[in-house]
Amino acid sequence: MQKIKGTLIPIGGNEDKGIEDDEMYTQDFIEDGILYHVVNEAGGTDANIVIIPTASSIPVEVGESYIKAFATLGCENITVLDIRSKEDSESERSIELIKNANCIMFSGGNQSKITNKIGGSTIHKILVDRYKNEKGFVIAGTSAGAMAMASEMIAGGSASESFVKGAVKMYKGLGLIPELVIDTHFIRRGRFGRQSEAIAKFPNLLGIGLAEDTGMIIKNGNDFTVIGSGMVIVFDGQSFTHNNEKVLEEGTPMTIANMTVHVLSNGDQYNIKERKVSVLPIEAPFI
Amino acid sequence: MQKIKGTLIPIGGNEDKGIEDDEMYTQDFIEDGILYHVVNEAGGTDANIVIIPTASSIPVEVGESYIKAFATLGCENITVLDIRSKEDSESERSIELIKNANCIMFSGGNQSKITNKIGGSTIHKILVDRYKNEKGFVIAGTSAGAMAMASEMIAGGSASESFVKGAVKMYKGLGLIPELVIDTHFIRRGRFGRQSEAIAKFPNLLGIGLAEDTGMIIKNGNDFTVIGSGMVIVFDGQSFTHNNEKVLEEGTPMTIANMTVHVLSNGDQYNIKERKVSVLPIEAPFI
Image 1 (tube, each protein chain N blue to C red):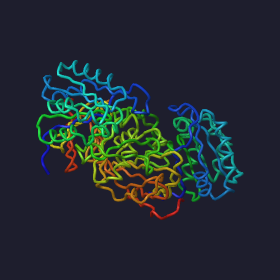
Image 2 (cartoon, rainbow over the protein chains, first blue to last red):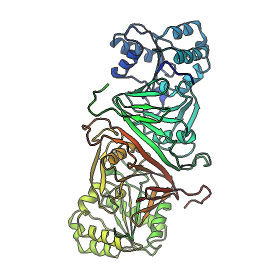
Image 3 (cartoon, rainbow over the protein chains, first blue to last red):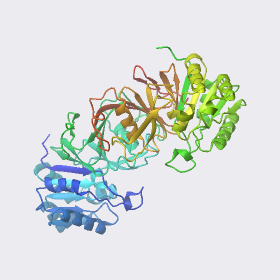
Image 4 (tube, chains in turn blue, green):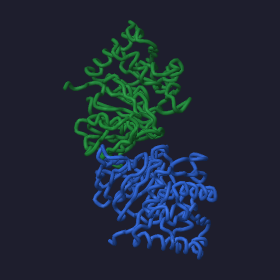
């Protein structure tokens, strides 16, 4: 497999302003700590950053809040690319912006809007191509923007009805990191069950649960480092000795034996291919 | 170690009527399915059942609702033992009732009330003695009544701030099953983090997360079978390759590598000493 040169930064989301259980009406704002890493990976404050608030139901407000947040860090080359239709993903302006950006930032909201309006488009192809081939090119995304990065995307699913077959709804994501299934707001919204079901469905994939104000910097399409103030929960199904997801009827509680779970925090590292944790020494400073 | 002859049935709680986040004001009601197992294990509808609603802030109402629920199953020998103080745990009536019961049922509420008012008392000693030595003697408990059964008891802890050292508060329980840490309402209240922290604190213990309307029948102090409509999540820390709980400062996110997790449902069995899952064949009927 070709070695990936770009950098991926999925983030677990931070602050919800709106109706709790409907990401359509959610606005995420990322603390400076995480955005600082995004800017740093993209080459510093001169980086050309393009915000895509497509997932959001209030894209104008979300775009403005990111311009402000990046400006606080000293960035001036910030553009909002407010894609609202498939046609917008084919426009000359969109293509130019994606071609010239050092960093793309997908906002939170509803992840299906990202895949419906951008998936399969010309800018999607450019994104994939630049991510594979250009060192220093960064694709970041928070909440829905993070969830859309993988190939198998959690599109919805109740937390309270979890661990019951059929509670999680899966769709196709942008395919940037096909080895993962990414979930966000993981701790506050109690999303352990739907991630377990996703991994029971796709036991060869690695389940990632990002807490709020927490992200990971993925390099080589394989090695990630945890950033932010919370934790990343990793679900590994390769150790399963039993998994009845395939044979159960919908609505039936699942049985899974021997899932391996890691709880990782700031500075901890993980090798996806080798399924190997490298934890930060306790005396190391916060990164 | 002496082989235990009695039966323990911890239950995850069912229906909350009251203020969501404060178990002081919570009333649990168990569906007939689970109570049927309790009655069956205690010898059938002639069983002498004693309800202890001590954990509850509305013990009279809770006692009455259990009398009704057991009556629906055909039981007539139901007594409510409304212990409200340490002195009540030493009274002649209390001692007589505990000595003559086939089954004790602890209600939900606040688990610390159970350990404060009953822990160390004469009736506590009789309960332990009968549980150890009498085949057919059943101790059941729902929610707080289940959590109080182990030696290391989760007394409180926020779900949203979990995976951060110090989020879980531990106290001493009744010591009936010292190998476990039991948590309840596990799925709906998203209690994965506090159980993970509890197991990081006591990595030799087995963490049990009971969903609502779900319980387990524990025999020999070692072998359990899942009953009810939901699932039991098992956290096994013996596979940890990293666990920084002991050295972290309070309020810091934890790192845990290689925790083993099982998701068990109706009919699945587990051997605590051998840490071994035996799952029910897919074609088996609901028990």
